[in-house]
Length: 553
Ligand code: FE
Ligand code: CA
Image 1 (cartoon, rainbow, N blue to C red):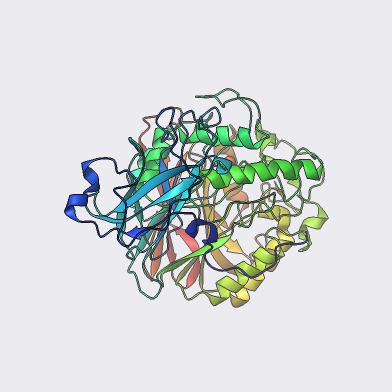
Image 2 (cartoon, rainbow, N blue to C red):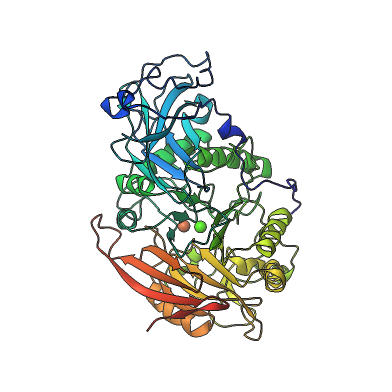
């Protein structure tokens, strides 16, 4: 696939956000200006020096009800700033319920939850054409510091959020602890895993995709709103449904997130411009444009909004000299999935056809069948080669280490995984082996099951070198098929690179020092139980300088 956005890009893109009318000011407020004494009005934030003028095009608007039904979120921190998010939606499941006007929102960042020590405040415009979403770049913050934040309009105050900046790039933090997961199908489970994750001590959370699912209302512990989503309005209402969940809101409010997408933010198993259902390309690209815009509107990302079906979201973030995160897009630039025919159920594994199991077609071995697209692949390899951080994470979507389900040649596998792009994978990994840093860790979601293992340049040739360690988080709530335990026993026996496979629901916690990394897998007992307890089901070690994972006995 040709790459039409090959261009150099800055590490951060803040043009839209920084210019967003917001007059962020160093508060320096005196005690008689105490914002905790009542909801601030625009006059109480009249700063010294004077703010940029509020546009005359933003009149006062009467709200029909509390606009903060979807909570707050923060994301993509730097050493001095963080993106603060909310969306005004008094009637969240029916288009938001806002008037058709843009509306001004006030925001504050404080060192305490009573907001007696406000360090930054300002106003931003919630634009009607962006579903009254707000992305504030709250800058001028101290590195490696925790903050509280909130939004206000008239007498309405949002839920409070907590966030945290990254350490300065030129510092040497002694450790880092973060969490990651993916896949929160609304119908297939409650979000007890989010509630437990929110209570953990984590600097941030990495979301690896399938934030929503596009399918129509079906059976489950709760039901999707309406049929399969196709239009911008449909996607907005689906994001709103998911974001009404209070455990999810609490987890966003607890810490910043680094967020990428997978397939279900648009359509199951799509690849580039290719719809699963072979829709005409222009029809599918129109659908994708709406889906991508709705994703932007609901995620706390340091990005400009898209203006069509092409949207560059890959970006990297630096945590002192300890860690670098390459947040990747494994969907938009893919060639179509090479396969040899219809998906086949595995003999004796019930409804396993839903996995999408194929014998690989010959063209899977051709690196021209790209997984990342030329520009993103160059960005990843060049960024890895230039990294001065100890640990280098690929925050991406699908299993990279290979899955030869029956141990056959050619493999019977899932072509939606990197296996479907075996030649492209080999090209990427050989370049990372030649020029990349020592400690590459692949963070993976998508498969509704947890796994851990070693990533070789050729996963099915044990004579090729281990280039990276891979941790695949399970899903928050999305279901695996019924034969999980039997399949786990099978694939662990047929895949020596694979050290662990478990389909319980939950998330993974990753903690590291300059010398070692530990990954702990947490699982809830039952996704159908909103009060489900959680336990640690496996712990892995990686030693700096030696790629590959070791399961603790
Ligand atoms: Fe999923
Ligand atoms: Ca997926």
